[in-house]
Amino acid sequence: MRSGQPSTPTLQVWLTTVLAANARVGVDPEIITYSQWTSWSTLLNASSINLVALDINLIDVIWDDQPEYLSGPVFEHPIEFAGMTRVEKLAMARAAMVTAGVDLYVVTALDEVAWVTNLRSSDIPCTPVFRSYLLITNETATVYIPSPETRLKVDNASSDGEDSFPITVANYEDFWTDLAAAGELAESILLPGPYSYALGISYRVHSTVPSNKIKILTSPILLVKDRKTQVEADGLRNAHLKDAVALCQFLANLEAAIKRSEEYDELRAVEELSSLRAAQEYNFGDSFTTIAAYGANSALPHYSPTNETNAIIGTNGTFMLDSGGQYYDGTTDVTRTMHYGVPTQEHRDTYTALLAGCIELARLIFPVGASYTTTDLLVRSQLHRLGRNYGHGSTHGIGHFLSVHEAWNTTYDVNFFGSQEPGYYKEGSWGMRLENIVAVVNANTTYEAEDTFLTFETVTLVPYARNLIDETKLSDDQLSWLNQYHAKVREKVGAELLRQGHTSTYDWLIEQTTPIKRRVVHRRVNIVAVP
Image (cartoon, rainbow, N blue to C red):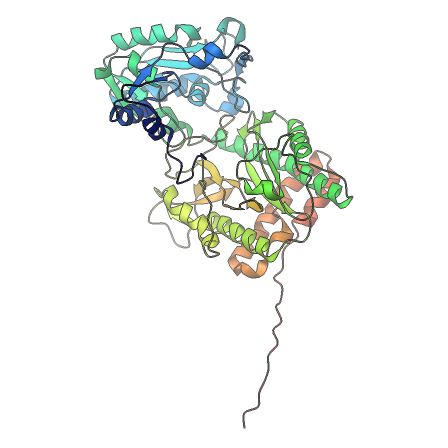
């Protein structure tokens, strides 16, 4: 069975077909969410099957050579990058608690804990967070971390401008006991519910506190965190500039290697791009596992090369590169598709449709309160004209030195940073995707605005593949936007390349960002004399 196919049942439906009545299905209550538990138990109970919360994870019992959890130092995210102190962030959380009418707030999302505490680590690959829980009351805040006595690298005189660390640090193992005690003392408890990319609280969290005191709401921290402060917004722009330098270096090197008929495979691409990013200031590694996919591999939207699938990047197919970096001043995510030979007209038509969708979305002016539903249709519209579509989302939020896929409330507001990423995948043959990170900013309108109008600023600064663009399929406005974008890339990235001494990449960039002129299409006209 293949997940996502119409003929493949969900796991819980499948269980009802293979288990007899009165069977028991065990789950780890720390892993399954409360919303999952509710839907699963309802479905299974209808078939007289019982869902059971286990005290121990059964996989842990049989997995003898299980590796240890990653547990690097938990370190300060300096105020020069964070932009707000812990005290300020806790005050915002407590203000939201007053509005919600609660006196205990249980924070379980790792990126939310990291954001509020201005702490980072490396417990999760590519995401600078740490295993943790956070309990916030009207007077106290306690963060629970594994081995805090050896891992926490923060002085009492915190660098965020406070006289002392305003959060109590406790052992991770003490969380469940403390949660039960705090739940008994509290009058009303805020537990985060599922929202966008946020999964909500686990079943164990929900079952540890009195059910009659629970309010399940969208996490207030989520709703604050996805609108960047000015310091965070400036940092994200700076991170994307540095990231563009590394990516342009890589693309220039790859193109030159292929022109020399040098053997260059997907795994080498992953390694060399990661190395170039690591050389940039404040880099903290990749933001996710790089998707470097050539030929038929590029038809897999979330492919990552392995020793078994590794392909040589050639000249007969498309090469899709989706990658990103973690920097102290921001997180990046960018996708470009290249062709190092002669693309077919189908390649060019599809690529141009994806590009036109990105351009139309970038040019959009919309009233405050517009949602993702509207923009998703627009970015797909050019591809729809070809009778094509794609099966993944077009937009996700992005964190500030946090998760590359960040939960958001799907309604646009100033300083939301997120992706715009249309794609097309011809199964078993080829695929392509274009992805920019954009920021929502105030729009300039022809007349004085009678309401608040917004638009998108494209923060990603990487040129498009010229040989895949059929400019005759772009409108005058679309072609003008493209040339203006390339001029911006040349100006900003070019200056940074020269500052860092990368003159050969600068020469490549100048060639890639030369204005595209519309070709004149000559048509033969037969003139017939009419007597």
